Image 1 (cartoon, rainbow, N blue to C red):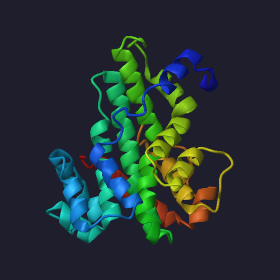
Image 2 (image 1 turned 90 degrees about the vertical axis):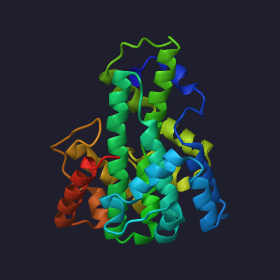
Image 3 (image 1 turned 90 degrees about the horizontal axis):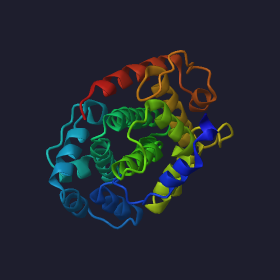
Length: 278
């Protein structure tokens, strides 16, 4: 039914305000600071601490085994010094995304939780891939690209939630309709979001092509996100489970030069990430 999504529903969803609660204001403020190259360690720490709940969640994520390893940080400033501003801003965006993936509607809440698992595991896996596939210098950007590649889905879920509360859409919808909405609209809405918030163009490029049949094979960050997306689908991280999906021998694996051993190691790490409480 992919392209048969009723035009009335499509128009309703596409017309929702861009300011739906997708990104935390503090996380966006930090992203703007980074985009303008205008910050000090103290300023990043001060802005991050403007919302204590967010700061606590950031420290929890910074100290998670998949992200930090054995080295622990006790304050946001210490995290900035030890991890770097881009890493801390990534964690701020991730922490705010984790909080946004929740709804009073049981069907939507279930979809949001599964979507968060997918986005979180994708981001951690993309960071690992960058560090292990000759892209060490782009590990932070790869993390954020993977974290945001399906942000259009979160936007659409928030839009559906808003329309249900307003009585415009019947609350008795199912997972099949949610998946159809995603298939038809999530890429265009994700691009719209990151462009509206002035994220660098590399992120909209990844979002726009992470499902495309024809894509820029010279873009290794895109290859990382496409590959980690397949990993998540193969292992059931999120709403889609395709256990028969072959990872070795894909064009993405070839571009990244990833071995069967590395794939096995990545899968083990992803299983650990899924079990983390965030």
